Image (cartoon, rainbow, N blue to C red; front, side, top):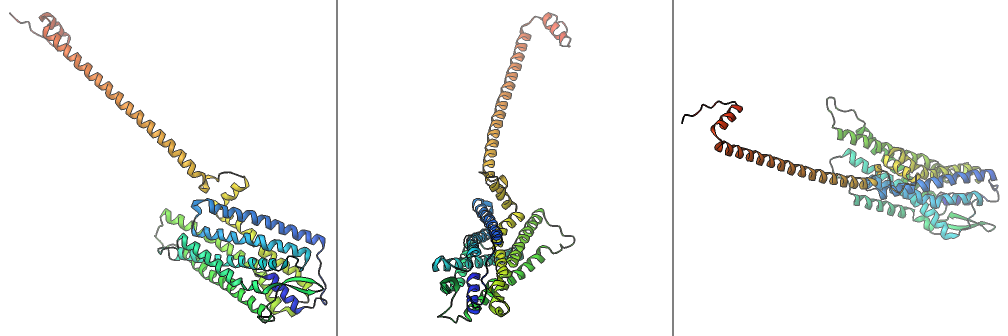
Length: 412
């Protein structure tokens, strides 16, 4: 968070440029570090873009937690565009700045804003999970409230990092050598202002949020993983909900832990520079740790989206669709599922109509056959009655014998 300017300011104030040897990277070292940064830039651009696209395109992903994750991806993209290329230029130019004062302010300011937005978004996610799991019967924040909360996180980030727009400037340090550094004069004391501001940022945007999240996730874990009451059986829906929430919590704890680990070396380095700089021999001896600490912080932006894919099936499907260049996201993502459901429902409707018409045809044909048989039976009965009434006695007796009845002759 403003590491470049803070570091340069301290070095300018405490070290004599003529007394310290100028450090130059070897060609092999520059190449390796440049390739490493190119890899994390590519991974971050691809991964975070897919995460944002997945949340934006998939209606089933429009949840509060996924909205926050999309915001994290946007913050990581901002770091990728501004912070990482700046570090590559430092590999070849050293601390020399050639891009003017406006770019000096913009790069440091927005890189710091994006890091602040990331930690505040993680804090907002923690509050959302805490509320949903610890107080399951209370109303959760709506999607609109979540968007409003994200707006507040960006406003706070902009406000907290606004002093960089004043302090960050291009200063000539020696023989026309320009550096983009923090210079708090004349409004503030240049000896103490940078130290105080660094301490404020560490407490408000690192220590306090992480301690708060540690407290909340301790309650969440104890709630989700506590032993069930003996003799009590949960329903299938409750078990599925609990399992899904466990997966989400595992993912978020991993993301927060990674954020803490990746950015901790930079905070340690800044504390050494600002509060124990007399123990650092010179600028030359601190370059390797300086590069490593910033590289780890930037690498966090590249790792995050692949953590989402590791823990969440729908993000995984989004990555698969992107790698295979699929025009339509698979059914599990919910995109083509709408089409398949419409198609299957239309087929079912057609089959239902066909079956219904077939049943009606059968019903009518059966009724017609029954009516024909009934009419035929009536006609035969009428014919028999008529013939019986008109035939002679001998014929009638013969007919009776054929039918199994005996008729005595009638004496006339």
